[in-house]
Image 1 (cartoon, one colour):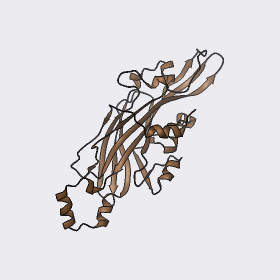
Image 2: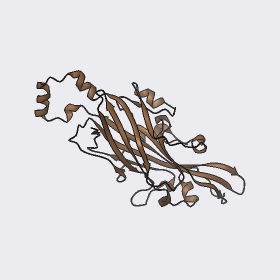
Image 3: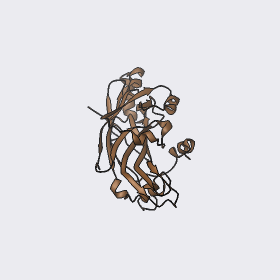
Image 4: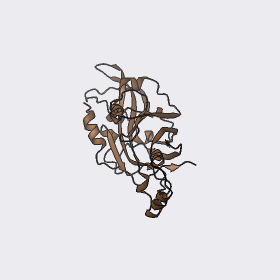
Length: 274
């Protein structure tokens, strides 16, 4: 059974995603927004088309839910004492300072996959309340990939946590992570499992049981996160994320049922888009 409260605790836990994330880091260029942490939860599931005493007939899919923890920085945190005194001397208004760190727009675009020869791929918003969960309709409906994911800014973070709709939401203070889903639907279709003496579990172990090599479904998704502030300035972060399916030592993998990784980041700042 899946326990969202336990997953929520794990989401803020201490695991390490050592490889697979590449971004742009230039701390000297207007470090108002940054990517602080990435958490990934990988699993698999299937739709059972027929079952009997003799066999199962399955359409098998793999998914990875991704949480991106962003942060808004007080500009004064990164200014030298000399620059801070200069700005005070220039009498920059409190309103202008506030507008710099106020988000007016947030969206993701330029979504690309490195491996397009596996299943039907999509990368879309996943409600925080459904993080790690998969439902039959996710696997039976055609997963249409949009060119752009536009987030509605919500004042109350609790409303983002409780949201169950597919309409992308994020709280304006970025206290809740951006939650997304990579879905590789129908990697294997009409696969027959005839050995029903072993219990059939609808998780990542299906990939092993149906002889789907992890190497064949490895993928990297790249995309750009855009943030516009109250002054109309646009900040961007270009990201390339390798979908985590096993650890470097090959001692743990999605074959075990599910696989989670996390990486704490430093100096991964959004760049001002001139």
